[in-house]
Length: 243
Image (cartoon, rainbow, N blue to C red; front, side, top):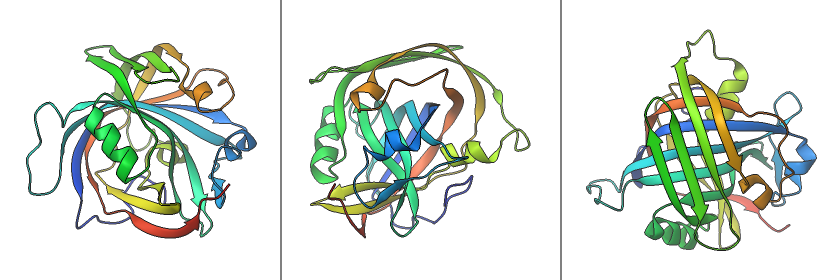
């Protein structure tokens, strides 16, 4: 279940990768606005009666299968995910991705083909110093992207973090579908080191492109220097995806 610590050990990973320079931006939504975009047999996983949609720009680094080295030029690239939180019909929670932007064509084509996740090929940059600037623009139609500037603050202590912070960040599986059947992809990594963050600039149209209403107000922001992740083998979940 959602929380600060991994739900299971991924003993036999199919991929290793590092997620760093990671920003979580979250907006609250009426659950009905999110539910209508989900496949059948999924319900929005709410917190305090609200649905949450997250935009997460970061750098994916050192992607490689077990026992093989990372490939220079192919294994490190910017990525931005648009996601929400769902429960399947058995009450198991996880991530549902509306879109995943990546500046690496082989990854985009491979993930779309093998895992049928909605990756989009985008021209992207991440500039990191005292201010972190994330830029993205899709190379394929329909056009969408973002220009985001975030100023990381100080590390947050365990006493400063609340249940909602772990609900939004501590997710240990993603749902997708292969050949019409929903599968889960487990993930294991150390607990997120979360920092406070201030959004200095945000210009994005990815939420509208996904079919969501225009978000209201400033997003809830967290920053993380990153984690080392192990992705497990996709597993059939027995959930039909017809709408």
